[in-house]
Image: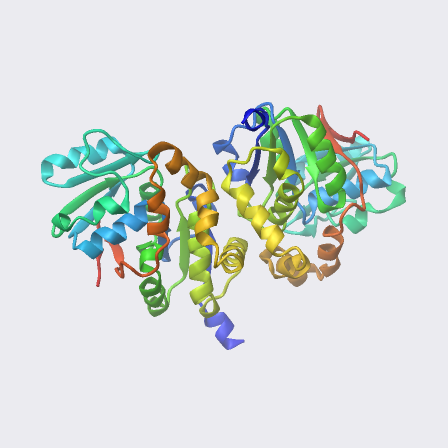
Length: 244
Length: 244
């Protein structure tokens, strides 16, 4: 029993719109936007990008062009006109980005980051399948309450973010106290479909939207790879930096 | 292809707090609060209750005592002092309730009903495992877009409501167009765990809360029974009535 009461809590929030019903203060918040913001952020740091500024609006993001930032923005899964990059991880794999600063606006991911930051989270870290194992190891080392925050799609539940949350609960859940139905559900969803993740995500509304709009079917496969970008992007002041 | 475009849409909303991100106007909304409001409503109509008024607050509910209503209220899963009934389906199985009017306040279910009503749903109907098959048959007959609205727990995702939504998608999903990740996820969750529902729900935070507070472990088993209360409770004006 002693161990039970000492254990830190692990919770999953399936949409940023549900954040107000959770207490994030002093907790470690993992922001998850598998398709594609947090996957792309991991790729950027693997390539050696110096820092990333995430912004909730495309208009704000554009302002940073004159300060020598690479500017990246997607809206409804399409690159915005006048920007250097969209939000596909393939675009971030460019070695010319090493040492650069990126300003990134996306539909869902950056809003979730802003929400978590404004609500007093002690640490905000980026999660994706691409950095899952090193992230889980780091979360265990922090010895802090953890919230896995799914960016979702326009404040709706989405499959790929929830499956990733379930993968994290699967890997580290036994070291935490879990009194959270969305943590239990996402764990079940991941474990029950562990050999079929790609098919399930391809069936998801978000992936279908990609396919219809951009024929970006490779992004799904790319973003489900595990541990190809072992980085820990943490928010320091206004910027994400790789703390490794 | 013709059939695809003619098909009605089926969506799942995992928390009432996400309702603003969906369009419920002119749609059929199924309100789901398995533990225990919508299960108890089905039992009440099976017993022959004439009408049920659902209220978002305990204080409002209490006012209806003087108008000859049976008043029922729970707060945090416990019956409120001074009320005739709490929110356990066992209390509603009393034959003395036949022909009576009930005013019911609950933590989660009635708020979801109020939200759906205020947002222009064309029909609001009560869903529970206790009436699942007749409800599914009725939904198919309506030939209208359907939203399965989980009441959740204090605006958070909960397992039992999502499992029920998944059971409905499992039964009637092929007759609808589904472009909704929570519909896909809840269907998977139900289908992958179809023989283990009771154990999963007993692991849920809500069920554990019951057990700790009230030792009401039988409510879980009771509310997972299928088709023991074949009624269709529909909101007509201010009251739910059984339209069968």
